[in-house]
Image (cartoon, rainbow, N blue to C red):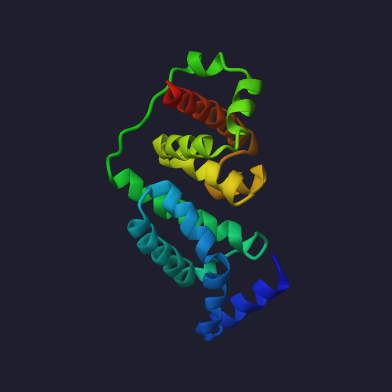
Length: 182
């Protein structure tokens, strides 16, 4: 953990609660982006982002200084958002494993590396159809540039499981985008 963040945490725990504002400024937009991708609604995401930072503030003393503060905060955000989506019954998109297995990595790469405006619009629509866990993984990896290891820590799963999920989600996005073109 960075010395600066350790100092801010210590100062906050010592009663200088205004120091916690540093984390709001530094991570607020990133946490909001993750949450809005998971819940799919800006208003809910704004409220959940506030809840996330309140939880982090209230549980700051339980933060283990050996890990990254941002990873700890992302885990709170992820769990907060996932809990909310589980309370709301959402239609889950189920895809046949055989269909996904028959897609080559080259096909997936060609589809996802197309940066045309139309393709980006299709990609965003496809991401909205993913379940909350899948949207979280895609957001953390591609938008927040988190490593597989960091994502595994946030989701509390193994790195191998994270890689498998990421691989499967990429294939799923390929199918969803391809279906939109028809």
